[in-house]
Image (cartoon, rainbow, N blue to C red; front, side, top):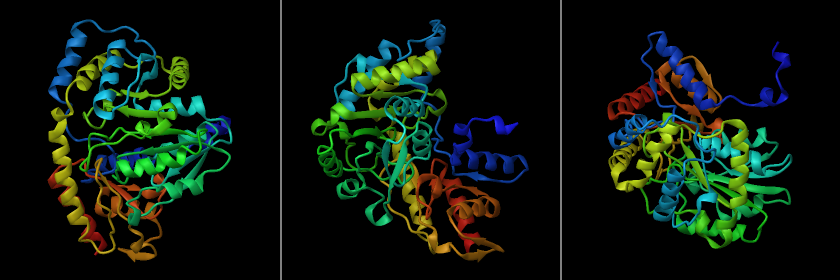
Length: 395
């Protein structure tokens, strides 16, 4: 019967982060003590002031269909957030609220990409970028980076990747999976290349902007003429520990927002009413309200780097944002450990799950076959135990 499936779904890859999480759950159901460091999900509870706003929304009888592009009150809160945090000015017609930032990305791809269009992806990139692009007929063009460049693409790298078929550039800062943060000067260099190619549009995924341990966050839409061809994607899942609330949003050119609204209207319509009311409260608060989470993530980052750097063959950059480390583990390729030969990052990730009972994600899923992604959105005790298990099994 599976032969009746569409060619589209047959070609679509399964999300490796979700697949590894499912495998970890399977082992846990068998009584195995698995430490899950595969999912990109904060381990904090949603702050009480946001939960209180959701409860009030229920009590105030918010239960009807919402506008496709979001409540006006939420869009106004998003506009103020963009002004406050990103120095970007939008009006109501430039904002679209979706069921998570992943839907925002899907809307953009469906609205802008034609079959054969090339989309530049600096590697490593978030796991779903490539398949969202392919699903809409686009061709991902990977730009390789390395630990030596802090996993960041330079203006020169970008220039070499541009062809007559280039339609878009997609990237995230802070980056999932590397935790790298593009500085003001680095974004300026990239924008100067793009100013020579006014036909290229940019998707700037900034969902980790508040989990930033370096300098102030910079948005590429603030440079030169980039405002008119940049779609800035954001949401509340990461910074506010609201992954299950499923609210994302974009700010961009009116014609792009209009197209995304049209697409969403035929797929899901408006996002959840209670979640939207809660997000109004979340975005109206100063980011200092969630600084305690950022401080905790920074402490964990410092710990896990210290522990991983003590493992022979693990090479790490120093991530300045998000809550991931992305060590190069190619030192172990071709080696046999505990009776298992490890040939690539996928096999390393599975080896660590089955032998050390630590769930990670292969770097292949992010466009880098030499690395694995480790989330440090876990307690200090869990991180210490997890790295201890990894070190012991590799030794």
